[in-house]
Length: 393
Image (cartoon, rainbow, N blue to C red; front, top):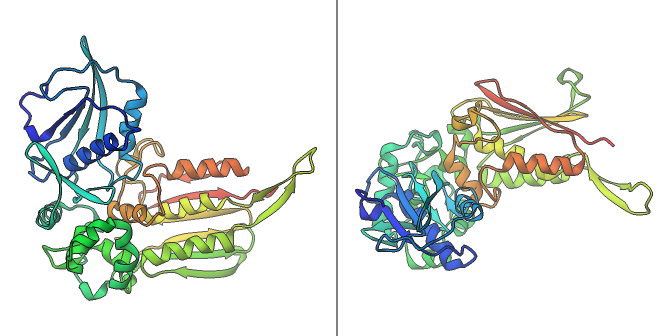
């Protein structure tokens, strides 16, 4: 088994109890190390579960629950950015084998629970500063996503160090590592994909997340909220607001705005009962998910902005950029990230708990609140729109 594959691209184990934190961490660290691909094999790594170090099978019986638990590493946010991986079961006369195939990531460093893990020969280790520099350089040489590209007109002076150091960094890196190293802010930014060392420029993600004036470099980097009279734009509007500035601050402000200015909750008597239940025009969780999805998935190379339009009976959210990558087929079951660094940052700040489940969570919240199914307009190549209908009972 695994003949002809470099030793550091294969890890064998007979441990299967994912309820045990040590076993869970062992799996997560292995997946993280394969995704970082420090030796630059540019080939997948394999975690073989049910195989002893000498290659004999342990007699494991692989159940669907184990396979699902392994797949959860791709979406549950413990590994960022999300790894590209697949899980399969192989049955033999002497036992089953669960195989996790992990592809090298295009945007290293990859972190498991805030730590960068790498493979060094047959063993794993936490990356040191030089290891991370190598991973940063590898990312710079192969980057294709707009948010990870350098913002060539900008400089380090255009980044708010206060926001990065005080708000973001403590959430992104474990306290032990922060105490252990004394890296310069530039190297800290680069390690988290917000600075391109090769070009000596902040990345577009760095400008968007911590920029002092993101719109100077990316003119469409804002959200326009309009509260219209009636149900059409021609009937006039009551108020208009623009949410701009760094996304780290902007998302917190938008979240508060939805809770206090858009969502209205009322008590309603339960039929044939003295009990009351509380119903909202919109569940704030759903609006939050849809709006944050638009922030994560929009096309920031476009000068267009996100439209957050509220009418009497519905809300429309439109972002520049149509469905991206794998999401173009079988939406919303398939998903892909136009801006993986921004997606990673929103997870780090706690605005996203899991990857690839935002639409599902929003629809469940709407159904629970009594709202009808939202409508998605996905045929345009230049924008994506979701229409959310109010609960007016």
